[in-house]
Every structure is written in C-alpha cells, then in structure tokens.
Image (cartoon, rainbow, N blue to C red; front, top):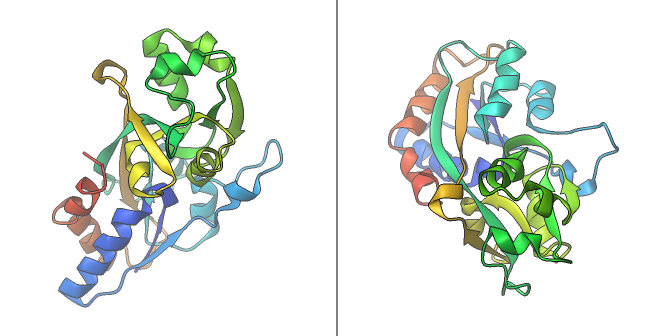
Length: 231
C-alpha cells in the first residue's frame, strides 16, 4: 500500500506506519514531496500537494489542511465517504533559534523593519490573513512581509536561515527543526486546521489494506500525532 503525505505532516505518519508494520507485518510506503519549494518556482507555477498527488499512483493521500483535500475532492480523486480528520494543528509564529529579533507576539510583526515570511501554498495558504484579521493588523503586518514562499519546507528554511525574523507556521514545526523556536499566539488569535486523510479512487488497494491503515490512523495511530503537537 502506497500513500502520499504532505511533508509538514509526515513525521507522525512515518512513525505510525512503522508501528503498524510491527503490529500487522503489513508494509506501508509513505511518499512525500520532493522539496521543490526549496528550489523556488516561476511565477504562476506550483508543485504543491495536489500536483504531486495527481502526478503519482497512490492508494491514499494525507493533506496538511482540509482546503488541500477539497481540491482533490473537486477533481474527483477521493473515494466518497472515506475522508477523515487525523488531528488539528495550531497556527503560531516561527522565529530563528534564540529569537534574535525578540518577537513575543503578533504586535511585534508590525514593528518597522521587522521581516515577516508567509507561505502562499498548501496548508499555510492564507493563515497570516486569518490570524491578523482577528487581531485587526492586516495592513501593518502586510507592509512587513518580505518573503512569500511556496510550502512548509520553504517557510521553515526562510526562518532557520535568518532570511526573515518571523513567519507564520504551525506549533508542530517546533518538533521538526532545532533551528526554530515557536511563539504561541493567545487563545483568541489561534487558528486551527485539520490534517485530513482519504482513500484515492485510482488506488488498487483502496478497498482493503489502505482502508485498514486509515482506520488505524484514526484510532491507535492518533497518538503519534498528539505527541508531535497535533490536538
């Protein structure tokens, strides 16, 4: 059985797949994005989640947000009734290790000269607007956005390399790269998005093995998500 998972959600899926194999002796191959986002894309081009799922042959897809899964659904790629939420991720501010710009909250992103990064693709698409809209600071923060990247790995790289002083990401990213620190937002500003899974109509195993693994992810397998910052 072969599945495609958004890279920003892959860590708990990998550990769940290993635990499932040890318990059942059944193999699950987990494919993730090829990090094209780190190489950059020409304007108007994209190598995001939906593109990579559509370009391959998989039994299941795991997306970093329901919005990404909606696109696959609209394309007719999902087995109807199979779509499930595996957990929620909490939006937060990402800063380089040591937090050299002393970013403590959203109001700091409006400071003159502070460099902000956002992702315009996949699970983080539009999160900055969702958060700043609640705070009433869209204009002020927009003026400080200096880096617009495509994808989770690209936004992590922008922060870790020091190209930006802060970026919008997920608290779970703090488990993925020691070069990052996470600044949580107050409860009134927190945005949550669902990591979603579904079977694919052209997957040869969707009626058996893939459905069994999906049920595992929604039951015992959820522990692997919870321990890495999902809720």
